[in-house]
Structure formats: C-alpha cells, structure tokens
Length: 375
Image (cartoon, rainbow, N blue to C red; front, side):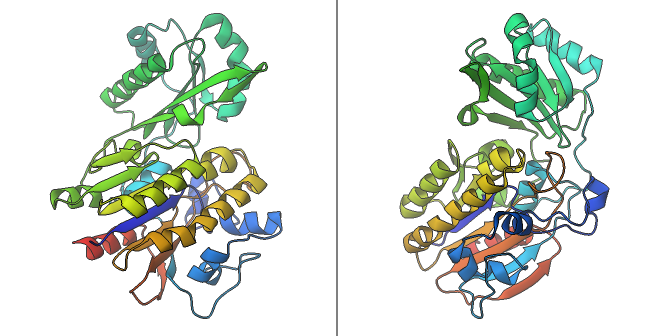
C-alpha cells in the first residue's frame, strides 16, 4: 500500500516572508538559520543529505550536489502565524481571515466563565509567557484556588491550574466550557489550552504530557476529510487530533514529548496500515522556541535528524516522507511569541526522483502532494 508520512517540526521556520512586519516581526527572523548561527552550527547530516542546506545558508549544514529528497520552501498564504493556521494550511485549508488575538478578554466573557465553571474568580487575563505568569501568580492561586487565565500574541485562551490543588479533570471541563463560551460569543479564538502544572520543591512546573488543546473546528474540509471520505485511514500523532478537533482523523496516538513522538511515529511507520501518518513534534516550539532556549532547540532538531535513517529503513518503496514546519518561533528574536516565517519542505521517496521545487506560495502544496500520492 501507498502511505504518506508528514512530520511537522513545530515552529521550525526558515526565514521571514514579505508580510512578516504586519505580524509584529521584522525581516531578520529565521528560526533555523539564527539557531545555527548562534549555537555554532547544526549537526543534521540526514537533513543535509535531503537538501536542507540547499535552501539557505545554514551554519554547519552543507549544500549538496545530489540531494536524496525533493526540497524547497513554502510560504504561508493564510493570515496567521499560529499552530492551527499552519497545520490547516498544510492540510489544504487556507484562511482568508486571521484568528483574533486579545490583550485581555472582555468582562462579559470572564463573568460568564466564572458563572458557568463555578470557579468564583480568576487570576491574570493578560498576555504572558506561561512559565512566567504561573511563577508570578502561583502563590495567589494556592490561596484562592482561582484559575490562571492568560493569552499571548497568538489566538489562545490558556487556563493554568495546579492539579494537586484542583484536578486535571476539572481543568479539562473548564476548558470545554471556555471553548463553548468563546464560540457562542463569536470571539474568533483559535485554541483553548489546558496548562496543568504542579509545584516541585517550591517551584511551579508545567506538565506537558497532560496539556490539552481545544481548537475551533475547521470551517471546511481538509485533505484529512477527503482521505476519510475515500475510505483512507488517517493517524494523528501528538496534538494533530486536537488541532483538527478530530475532523478527518480516524485514529490518534497522544505523546509525552518529542522523543516519545518520534518513537511512536517510527512504530507507526513499521506497523501501521494507515494511509496518512501525520505527526506534530511540539517540543521545539513549546519548550525551546517560546522559552528562547537556543541550545535546547538545536539539540531537539538534531534528535529529530537522528531518526530519519530509521524512518527511511522502515518505509516501503511506495511510501513518501515529508518533513516540514507550521510557522516560526525564532529563539534569538525578541519576546516569546511565534514568528511569521516560511517553512522548509523535504520529501523523501525510495522511488521518486528528487527535485528542487523552489519556493511555493502556500503550505497547501503538501496537501496537493498527499492527494496526488494517495488518491
């Protein structure tokens, strides 16, 4: 059988696009190149063989004469720089209007949230780094048991709780309530995110494995729905199911981080009969991009690179492997938010002739490749 394997390295952008300044960035943003330059070079021999170094000047990554994969750069056509927008466009859905972002949520929304959850009050309600706001408000959270609510430059409504104080099941239920309130009031918020944490040696620590995203449902069909309607199986690994609210995803596997996601993807490539295996590797964004950890990001990319030969060995002659990203989050840039960037495209096949695809105007080029391959 033919299969397509898509691995999204969350936030691994490869340079600003002309309208980046409209999104609060400047033309210097370039997640891969700036990490490589700042960290003394990237050690990614397998992506190098695939043609990564042919896309840009990336310290430590050589240009190669005969790449083993097709390679190119994809611009984002949708008006956004967030996870949902990026993944939806990869799957062929281009948004004409961006999701809304907020400096704070209206009193009407917060009052309704307090009423319907019975939480009696909230803390925060302003843009912030998740780790920072939890540290700032944890003491008050312990006294009041009020949830910590915050947003960012992305379209998100985030709820943080110490789950030793209030159960994770309650956190998830409150997120579902928030999702309905935001939808009912046409707030245009992309994701409600559950941010569970606990206190270790007096310091609050987020629990990434228990994070849960409650996305808005895609307004139109994506390639996932098209495949499902054609009796194809779609396996979502990591937060893919959440990003698409399950629409078009016929099977799901949750992950506890990149290493777990890589191992579960490898197991799927070896054993799954799903036609599309669609993986999101979130640590590059959540742990390293937003926290401006250049060395952590570098090591995460290098770990992903080390799995490529294992994926290739497990692939059949009919499979294709696509490595890409959904936006940028340049850890060398100011602030802690996503950056509006183009993304790399590397597509390996044991039988298809590699080619330089150049620069494409939309991430949905990937949906077209998957459609052509599987249908």
